[in-house]
View 1 (cartoon, rainbow, N blue to C red):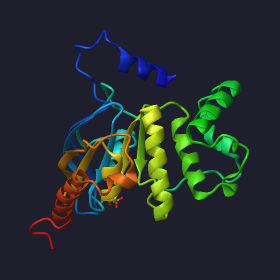
View 2: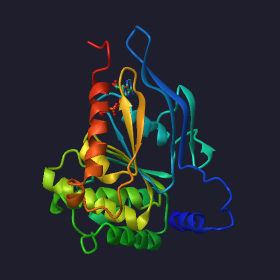
View 3: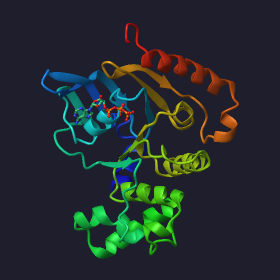
View 4: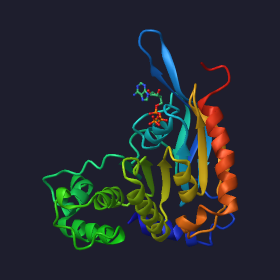
Length: 280
Ligand SMILES: Nc1ncnc2c1ncn2[C@@H]1O[C@H](COP(=O)(O)OP(=O)(O)OP(=O)(O)O)[C@@H](O)[C@H]1O
């Protein structure tokens, strides 16, 4: 299983002198789209970025600045117009089966039980039934849904449905989770609970997470690194390391001075990148 391979890599001493291969390397990545009759539109321009394996990275920026486009490029659902994307040292050229993609909408199939919803990717991959059962049980345990495997989506609370889609993203052993505003539609309290739960799962499981959010608090609370995007054209304007201690107590963190400093700095950047000079 993928998880075992990763642990071996992380604990190996044989390669201690080798440079660590990033989970993702984006080099001069530009993505253009056709725009009506009048040519092309640059959604993302000249992105140069490395994402370390096992890190939690948040992407933040104004609407339309290319965050989802970067996730789609990472999943191999789009290819760059210029530049290259490398995943674990290999250049991406096609769908990236090493990632799980989780979006705001859970898209659970209402006619399938939780167990069967989570097992879909394994069924498609023709994983034998016994192994499927074992892996689904493991992942349901990880996200705290043991005992609910025979329920249908309509019998699950909002938080449980979120955990179910997380389980579905994790079950085939991806080394990265791409999460596109997964908690955007939740009320404040459930969102806070899910942020805490996601951190606990990540701390146990240590996959790489690339997480898109519009919420600066959420980004600082979760991330090792925050990538701030600007618009017109979409591009990376700043990368902020978040050296706050882990495990993080989200409630306490909000009142710490270090948190406040990062928040102010990024808020100013976001404000100016939402209203670039000369923009109308
Ligand atoms: N397939 C596509 N065809 C044409 N234009 C696209 C396509 N996908 C994205 N775009 C455009 O590229 C720009 C960047 O879109 P993207 O969805 O990556 O932004 P975003 O930062 O994720 O926005 P939001 O925060 O609103 O979700 C937008 O102007 C969008 O309309």
